[in-house]
Length: 219
Length: 219
Image (cartoon, rainbow over all chains, first blue to last red; front, top):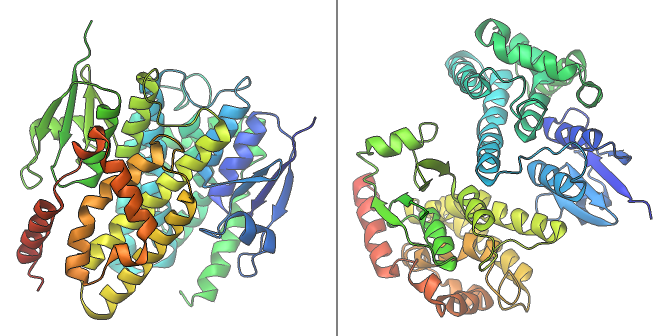
């Protein structure tokens, strides 16, 4: 019996991209449904009544919400191929910690980088770079956060990389200049088909952010 | 070889209590170290350099941070006794979702209830009760969120119950009047030695919050 997998998503979402990447890593076929977040579908409201947010994975009719919870679910159900979480409980706890760190910090700071000006923007840029440097330190000399192969933290973080161009453009700074090892890691990840097919074009994301800035009246 | 377990904690923290509860459920002996959050120990700063927060579990010298990550770690390492997470991946995803919901909502709303006044406080009270009602709905007719035994969501949520008296007192409202089933659940949990020995006295918590209000200059 084939699995029926549906993904409710929104194309620029770095959170939705995490799920696309996990599904690609596992070689899974699924139906992608684009949501208009200003006009949410009855299906989305039914499947995620609590948060009404994407991504939502619907597996054989049953919804799973919150991107990192979805990625762990995918990893556990399809555990035979390309494991994303380590098998050792301590390593697993460390992977969850760093994915949680990405969740706590990067979206909020990135948003401030593209949507604020002056001192607020400068502070956000500074903290954003500090976070990336901390992550760079955690990567160390490993090819991926997961070691020799991409893992949970790689999935949690690499999807932000297609937003870097938009952040750099709006914030007038270079992420590569500050965090060359991290940018090298993003390029290494993108050599994988699963990653390059799951991330959006940075220029398309930049266009989306420009549209958002217009809509919010940000110069 | 015996395990060495140390818990860095702060007595009123509902997050620290989650770890105490998980350790109690597993029947584990550990050394409790009280932190003064205004004067953090070198050990805390060394073991949690990223967030510098409690709780931190130190297992055979290695730190694990973030309460829900610690609880999952404990559940995975000592998996033979009193499992907290379900064995089914879908049920596991649901448990993680609701524990994450508690994390996203309750602390901030609770904090607003005791530290604000007027309309801001009224809004926080209203949203807080809405969250508890949603959780009540998720509990349904089950004795515990985990079903017949306490589980991950019970551990994530029940530690807030010893703060309810403080919220009610400073917010001038009754949680039991609005959410009788949830209060019944907290009492059911408290019948367990592991829970009653891990939660703090609500009056002691109330005194702590009074002290915080004074220190922050809140009437």
